[in-house]
Image (cartoon, rainbow, N blue to C red; front, side, top):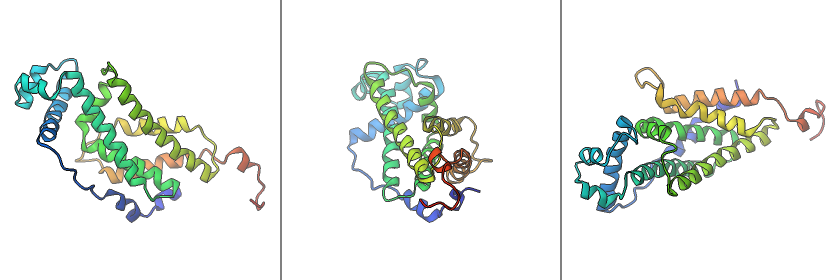
Length: 229
């Protein structure tokens, strides 16, 4: 079993403390309510299949009122995606603060990702299935947030690789990890499957064992047993 399975859980649990609430205006609260209902409509009908009238009925808002908060259906989707990815990235950065161990940092990344995905499965389906729907600059901004998230993961893997003197392609490892995590909303059943914390532990073990099995890098492999560093 890899050293990751022996990770002290209290240190990880300390990263899960709720953030201080931020004061919201009445406009912000109503906008958030509409976004929540819009997520459900997009989940049920798809972005292309949903109309502004569908969204108006679901949110109990007149068409005029809906356009007051959002000038288009595309902006609704944009704000859903922006809120989701921004929240994931911000929470991750908070949890990584003060955690120096490369292995623990990867586990925090996995837990943060799975925890949000399982708590927001409808939003995750909308994001996964409507990935290419945004145009007019909206898509570029969301892509920028995604790239930042990807680069954070790459950096975590690079630091782990360096600490363990391993040799593997970080890009392949990162995309494989996302492949494990991103489709969880399609199969997770809370009645029979573990919660986010346990799933993160198991996925972390599987992933870390896999990259540890890649073996030492070229520099490390050239060293003879017992040789000085």
